[in-house]
Length: 223
Image (cartoon, rainbow, N blue to C red; front, side):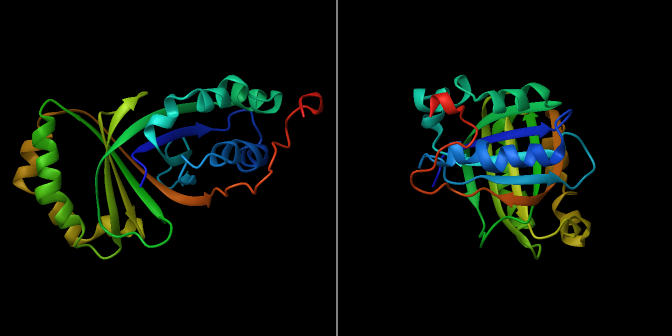
């Protein structure tokens, strides 16, 4: 199991949407999944009407993100990829370390509820999560895996919790209201200094390139 998460929020901006998707699926993701240290790549589309509208999550061995092999992917971009990156409205890259995981997930996540929190009393926040809040959430039908991460690099809150669920309607149930309206939660939230909450729907899972794959956008003179 990977111990890191690379999360990249993006918006196409001046890049036509189909070109944006083609770049991700034909060049950007295969370049990463050619390395076994990248366990997977999942792309999500915003389901809450907020921006950025797209998210790519990669489960990855954290140490690999500090290697020359990985750094070369960004330092030696093809002209095609460089032109895409320069014209995106948003490219927000964040690295996290996995801190906790519970709950079963069979197959791919359908929706993700992503909650970021920074607290003046972090130990108390995590104690509440793991002692009260998470057990209550896992009683909700369709509430699957829950993972917590700590921010290593990038913008965002220090603690990131990703909930894999079948449908956002789970957040309208009595069980969800019970899980989010306890006295302990009220106490813990009084120490929170920054928070965010997003909901994303699965768009597509990246495919690992076949043996012998080469980047189709590499200039001919470099092949």
